[in-house]
Length: 407
Image (cartoon, helix red, strand yellow):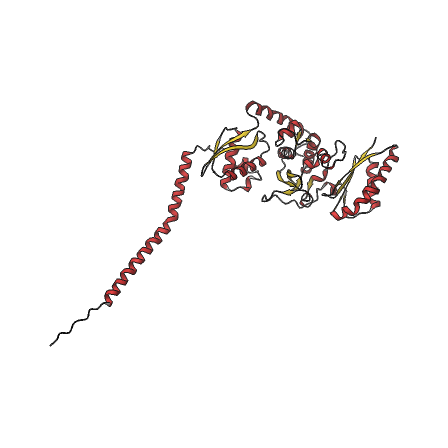
């Protein structure tokens, strides 16, 4: 009798093998998941250790500047927390005229921007050019700033600036209305500073307040410095003038509203260079005192990427305040108004039009008819054999100004 062979049962073995493989796969996945979950913590720990190593090895200065000291800076508030630390590091170092100092960034472009922002906020720092030599590393840098003057010379200049500032501010009270304080500083700088591209130190307040010869940067920093001393919020604004290049002006806050103010464009010396007209000494272009975006941005282009406050209101526009703003044109009315300026012996007469096409509509009649008739009125009224006058056209601002001579 033949024995029957027993069949080996392979299926249970295969099943058990699959269970083991699945369990091992699951364990590997779980271990990987746990590792991945722990990875960010590990990376953060590594980063923190690296930062701590830099802090331990690099001799950063302890920041002793109080937040309240920098909190009013417009440009300071455009920076993030890390950049604000660098801002303070720079301020603390250059204020003490450190020969070199360390900052918490190795990015030279970032450093340059923060340093520029610092100087825009701090007009009192007259001894810095903004120029530096810098040795950059991954997470930090060593900075060697350039200074215009040092030690005793810096101290002497500071005294001269303070004396000039006190002489200016003696003419206005800090209790005067805000508009009066702003207009006073505008007029003071126009009347005491001459525009000259060759002026020494023309990027700081020493040129405008002591030497009294400067360019747009010197005018604007002096306005910022004086108005801040008078308790007026004043921003140093930057941008360009088409066909001319980089330019600086101010944005001031008056009675809760923001307005543009460009002292450089208010200066007759600057106007004379630009127009070629023979403008009388002591003349002031008030079109750039407390003006709106709609007016200033006809001729000025703000720096892209800087969120300057909007200046929407024309309520303090000089022409609006003084009845020189025209929504329409009537030749007879214009002659009557111009004659009135002659009777009152005003040094000039200005008319500003609400839009450019209206300016063009009125332009030829004013130049060819109205001004000559008003000049004849001047001759008859004051008994003059000859009459001197000159006029300046400002198509960007839609303004025509005539200057009268009474002798």
